[in-house]
Amino acid sequence: MFRLKNKIAIVTGGARGMGAATARLFASEGATVVIADMLETEGRALAAELGGDSIFRKHNVADENQWQALVGDVVTRFGRVDALVNNAGVVGFGTIETSTAEEFDRVFGVNVKGPLLGMKHVGKVMTAAGKGAIVNISSVDGLRGANAVGIYSSSKWAIRGLTKTAALEYGHHGVRVNSVHPGGVDTPMGNPQGQAGSERNWSYQRVPLQRIGEPGEVAAASLFLCSDEASYITGAELAVDGGWSAGYYHAYLPGAPASLAPPK
Image (tube, rainbow, N blue to C red; front, side, top):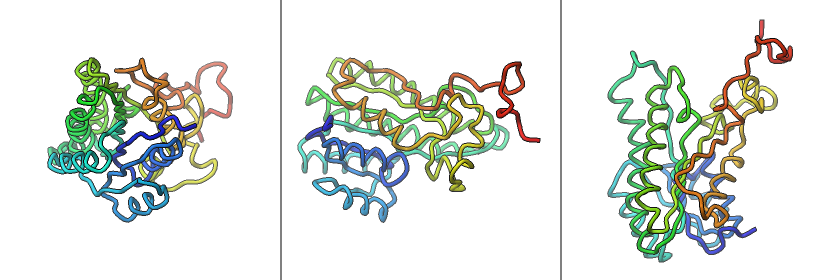
């Protein structure tokens, strides 16, 4: 307990889904959380729920001026930033043939430019302090190929490169940078139809653990990487995907249980 006692943490996209689960877990472990999100109603409600000194700030991660203002406000109020979770993200669907420059700019603006700017401005504060931890939320689609999500997948691959570069640049200043790669997670993005019960898991039967992930399971990975328990871990990639990145279970091969056979 209290693995983040007296720490100041910024969580982008923190108003709902994995971000909200991360904010709640960090607060329960002693952190003061800055919820940075465009969803004002949800964000303010969550900050009130967390209590203490936790606050909400409306924040567009793709806007550098807003990053400067956010970090300046946090440092003025709390004196430092100990942890940053770059969780904000958007998804986009479409083949390469149907992709547009506008869609590329939208997805890369949030998924890549956002974490880059966050590391740039929070990194200055952390390097001056000689310590800090940054977690970039990528995806299982940043570890493998996936058809019809080319722009999204490439944005999540880009996060891997940024994370490793940042680990090299910030490591000698005592700042650690790692990436987390969720698979399917029961959030508005991962379960947009709001399926409940066993229906949530139907499309995950070929994933080794045969179920969708919970937001708290991803939050736990971010907690570990931001805690002192991960003090010698940087530039790493932690897959929290039920084994999805290990490969799909082939239901047609000998020895596969009948329960994994595709529906008729």
